[in-house]
Amino acid sequence: MAALLEPGMLVRHPGQPDWGLGQVQSNINNKATVNFEHAGKRVIDLSLVDLIPVFGI
Image 1: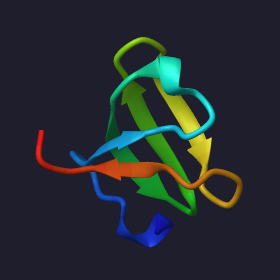
Image 2: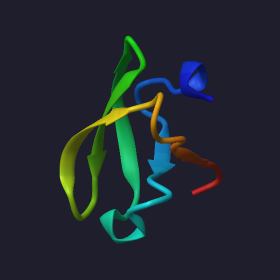
Image 3: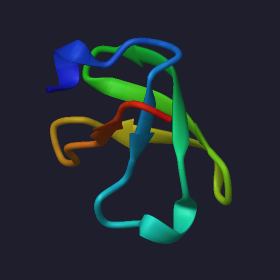
Image 4: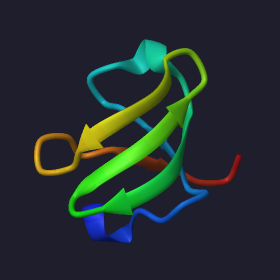
């Protein structure tokens, strides 16, 4: 899944639902920078967390 994340994609963090919807800013070396509605910009290690893509919003 990590390889499919591209800038602009919308995602949710499965362990932090209160962070809200996030938009992928970058995905480099298995680390994604995501800007979340309620948590701001976070760097997510994609080897530890499977972000959930959100489609159709």
